[in-house]
Image (cartoon, rainbow, N blue to C red):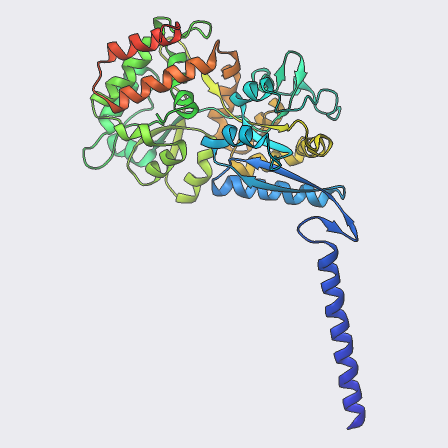
Length: 412
């Protein structure tokens, strides 16, 4: 009996000892990056990624980066897209600043201009070659010969349609604007669903969605007020007047579009590859076709950039950027987040592997970077004002067009 008591006490001692070791291990490597008595340098990434797939991608990227090296410990914080640049600017005078940002490409110019981003020219690994990227995508990160980041992903928009409704109506894929208008009207069923929807919210998203129609009309990126652009105004206004498109589009973000599409409220929508993960999860039977032509074609290139914040841990930021630029890492994260890799070779392989993305990949060849559009910020504001009037008022389209032209020419 005594032997049994002694043996039980011995086992208890061993168990307690093992539990103690476990606690010690947790203390030596906690979420702040403390590892075996040596604290890692902490890095913070800010991103506006908000969908389930986007957050899963960033979570995995951060986790695997932390596991890949022992010098830095990275965490990420969500900052809403609408407030991203404003929050970053306001934080400049305080202590709560990120080391790295994942930001929308058209914001790079203004962030560089005010000195918020670090020049990392010459700091990237030799495997990061500008010629590997789509030329228009690499423009995201260059300013006067200096490099301020690396493209994280790229995308554009196309027309996504509900196959079931198309089949029920026995409709063909429209290739021209006239065919598109007739298709949108035919698809519309009052009280059931609209034929077409796009995002017309104020700011970059609405302008980003309207620009491909202007490019298809043959507008010059050197003169965004030329007469060709007028046709895009009349096309969208006509769809509204025919009630083939809801006025609520002025309140719908691109994520809202996806929700309306999967709910069966619209039969066609303009959206990008980031929406496909949620469409696949919903089980809806969808197809994708390129923008209908109207004498010309063109899309605006979207996508994010990884950039190092000036005055913060630039070396740590570059370490993370170099890690992301590994072929297998970039491919994996783009697959999870539903984005096209910014490197041409990887993008083409991505399209072959994922047939639903092929339309977007092919459109990359004739895509335009917003930086290439003369006075883009003014153009963006003018388009935004016009969409607000088009979708939210009874103002005559001729008057809306004239005000747009005056805005572009600096008369407003």
